[in-house]
Length: 577
Image (cartoon, rainbow, N blue to C red):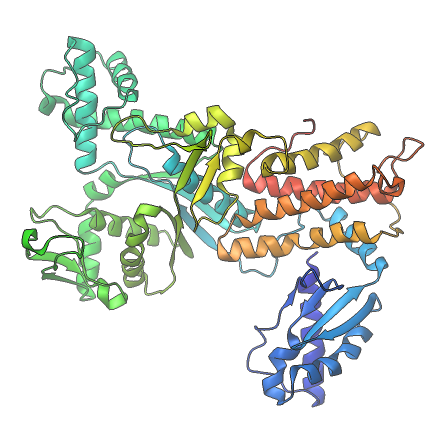
């Protein structure tokens, strides 16, 4: 039950009726009309801007139109207590207490669908996220983007969209050659006691390579490691496979499972790069040309060469982009173009890429080529996951993958757990940097948002246990004839915002809205709970050790929303803490 959508529909029906009667002009589009949550300083439940949208078409002030509409709106609903006008033309509506009986009845009886945006067109999404090079376990730099992609997927699935989660395996190119060489030298270290060439800065020195090397030698006794060239092809496959095992384990421990892993080397081997280049050539979007030196480079050291270029500037990019290197091998961008052509061939309505902060500059070129290939301007949506700063004992951690001393996802989970990792990583917009404070995520206070939300659910569970009821079972109430107090209605109004939260999180792909909402709802509940220490009418268990039905269903709808939100975020709701 979305009270905002219900009243929007009522208002639209009313103004269309007035238009048909000839007493009101309508603009070309009614899309600008909103029914929203009013500011905190207004004593009302919902607010609409309808008068401001109609003002220009009717050549009247919003205040005049609002004054005309308020009486007509009130006549359509006997559950309205007051309706007023606020500058510059907002119409504010406050419901009678009986309205919230009907609301809580609908939310309790249809809790499985509460929050789902039924008006949103259902689409088929492909969301690609993580896609870290398969050169070792995931580090904290990958963690935020992984959770962002997973929870965006969960939100879309909750809203009944069709979603596929995909990981692009960059198993082609120089970094894989260097990774395989690193494994090779670790194997030589194990078998022949040769010293690992740590001075070679192109190699990966991490200790995890020792485990990869041991696994490969233990399971492949037939392989000879005398010369790298003789074993490189098979060793590459084995090394990447072992690295992917680590990555999949990291993801599983974060609660993330991808539907598909697509290999870059398979894309190249299947000549998909050549196919997409041919497609772009047919559209006259590829040519032989030269690229000027990037602004960050010294012009004296830059050598302009004839290269195969994509006309990215046709689509708003600042320069055309290279598809081939000087040795005629394909650039990473060319492989990525082929991969996105592969995605498009699978007939998804929308593609979503989750990118790290270091790839923000890559967005324009990849969205340009997807537009070129699909003919659609907004076929690909890119979301950037900004940096995470780890703080412990008031001091920042630093990590460097090349040095092998970086903080892994496993380190983080071991320190604070999966739930804290997911919730805190998601607690701020992905557009801004995040401070992950190890001290705060372990506190049992309102300064730890995960604890505060989980404690809300645990408190409600304790009431159900006290009266021998299972919080996980559906609650049947035969008669809804309750009289909720203003403090209780304040919480019910917050419950009413849940569909609005889901709608915004889904349409804008902003999952941080959910933990923020859950924290706000939990704060309202904890405040009400604490009132019961001084005011017996606020207590859930009465003197006869029973819980009245109005309080019982009140608690149930709060717990259902908390459970629903935490499930989307991918964290647990313990019944005891």
